[in-house]
Image (tube, rainbow, N blue to C red; front, side, top):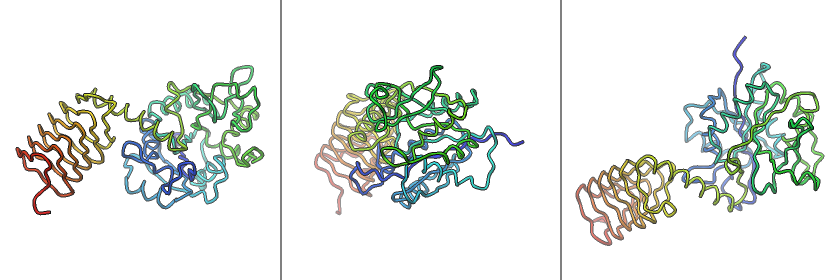
Length: 365
């Protein structure tokens, strides 16, 4: 008998109308990367055999972006939800990727929303561990935020086991007092998930097939539904508008800055230092307030950057200084001093040891 498999379904079909953007919601950027990429990263500690991304709105753009990035540690497939009829329908579409397979009783599928970029790999790993240890039919990741408004509430029976999830629009006044929410992050036994999905009904306030209703279907059929409470509610939050996007980016930047401080980088004021997750910094770099480092920028050991400098896709050699300047796709040599008020455009190169002086632009433009 083959060993039980672990796979994942990532839901990335939504249009995200509240973003008011032509960019598909899963591709909105946080700290230089699309939010969907962080969700895929959250699977890094659980070694999934296969990840199925359910696309829908702007399916071709979302698929192409993931393929361009490349994910050597994950086998990623795509299925399209041509009509968005709710999360339950989206997962049903995702399961068609296994249409030719008969799942083993212990085969597990993780279901993740494509708009939860703060989710940590350790949290997903804890959820999977709990699910496999207990042998539950489903295990929910729940959270207890300060304000649960807008989220589905987790309702428990007399034995304190999870009995069902009720969405905000369908909840009674008493149910809205519950402070534990469903984060839309789950583990399911795959052989039970398909039959449970077929029992869903769109008889609700939104006329959609809710994935959350699977919880009640499994519970009422006598199966055990477990739960894990997230240590930090904020990491489970989904992003539906620009306000939530800005909040998530601020949280991710604080997390990124802390990692660099721990790695030996000095920030005079971390609150005024902006570093994309794609940037590389060597130890003993000093970043002054107003520094913005984006894209594939690489900063060598001992450099001083800022104040008020923006570098995009720029290579800076060891012990260089860049102050009050802008550089895009340029190169600054070792021990060079750039600025103040220099402008480097794509292809510009400041030779090692050079002092550009103020208001510098490369010769021959």
